[in-house]
Length: 144
Image (tube, rainbow, N blue to C red; front, side, top):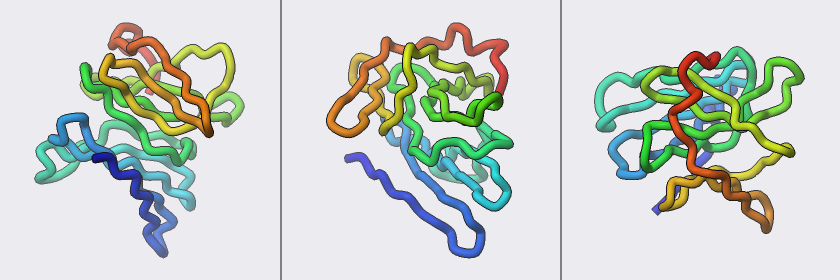
């Protein structure tokens, strides 16, 4: 069962997109703050206690729910590009807190998910693009 709730908090101008790890042990809260023009991602491990901030961006990222990889602790998300502001597909390494851009031949948009083979699937409209399984390699030393 997959839930794609989008919650808007009145008065705070915050959009919250909850999403789960594949085994349902960690709840991710992806938040886009319109007024402050920032984005953040918090993980609630074991769905208890204080959340751990995994990601912050001083730009407004795409308000599309991220996806958690089944094989590794990576999160796929659309991140605002600092040079032109357009969203780019990126992978966040939850252990290091670093992100890296996913090289694409053309811009893509849509809902993100990982299939059972670990491939990243971007579903947009009637078509879906399948990208090779992401790895942690290259995430180290990338900018967050």
